[in-house]
Length: 267
Image: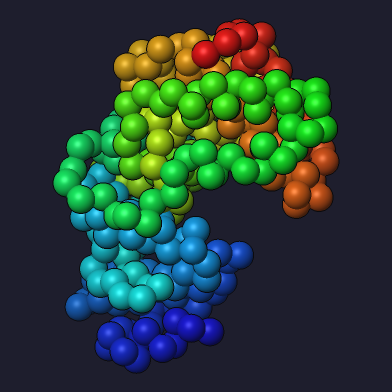
């Protein structure tokens, strides 16, 4: 595992067993006595996220203690609150507002964003391909194309903002982790919130309509345009599910797209 190379190179102290995800090799470590996580990106997508974390410099995000090549040493957040659990406990509105606050930290104007950030139109390639199937995929792609052709309020984006990627530090509050490192309209980052923390929760009757209102108010977004982003993102997510041979999840996600289109038929 490639974590061993960086542990030796940077004089890190292992503090747990290394493990892998589809996108990264990871190992809990100690960095100058502090609990940290070594993360080595396997591909360009995760490496872009690492570069965005470096650029955020710990402002509303896990602190980066060291970085180089494909690796970063991150502040290890051992949180005492959980947004998914909050939703399950009936605090969906509060969880959505916290996510909006976290997004605002990422979207704050800062000089010199990484050149490697991926323009949002490229991110939608899977939906563009799936649109040839017609039906909801074609409808979602048409909405996405309209949004992408004339973007508003372009910022560096987290790209995967949901209940599991904002964690609570007892010392520093709510912090984002695991961004994708995109560049595009600010509203895109909020669409994923409305498709989480699970497809079952997201699809509950009335939930999308209510949370769209909560998020639009908290983030200062036009509600109709936010719902258009939900339709576009849900179509994209469904296309990814099909690529991963997950037809059930694709169908559930397209149901969300249909809800969003019914609530706001055009951006």
